[in-house]
Image (cartoon, rainbow, N blue to C red):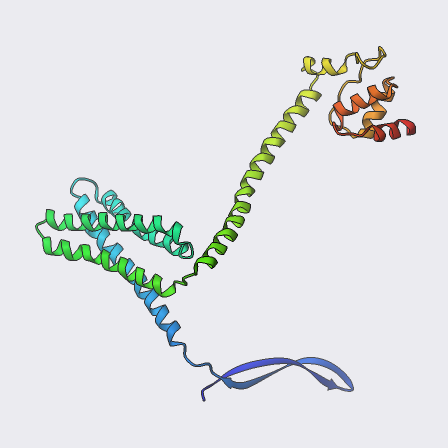
Length: 281
């Protein structure tokens, strides 16, 4: 049986001159080595091979299509544009990989990848046709097809098919989490908007230049039964502060004080709360 050596560290008591302390002791032991996982090694090799094929196809297609486009534009621009042909179907394959557990959503990038691959192969073949090298153009176009096929095989190696019920369960859980994620930026947007509204309201109520806004609130209260003017608003305040401000301004009618509290402090303040502060004033 194969074994492998590992180091194990543990605390052990050590005594010097009658004083004992716990110190680290390191020992090397042999443990059974697990058998080689050839399935995993082959899976990794297939994945690496697919990545190499994709890289080769990208380089070849970019070179061929760039040479075709360089006939009419600057070489740098031509080769940069040529990279887009293969990068499109490669990106579609990456999205298909991310959506491998959601077959319905993976259909769109799969179809888009096949279409982008066809366009790329046609462009490579057109390069050979323009330069009277039909065989080279056909063989070059097949490079991208082989790379696409290799990646498709690699994806099947890593695929974990789900039964119908499990797939539905995953879809429902994903929808719940996606909804929670979507609410994060929505809540931020609503909070920013509410903060802007609050700042605007505070600016209007505390700025003496906005006479029309303050005059409506600082004039006489027609329902208070008294001629005492309401105190001028000075910004947000608590219910207790609002009651004290009303009392200092000569407003003694409980209903008038309650309306003033609803205006400047808390629109949901209870009558009993205001009455308690009135008794304590």
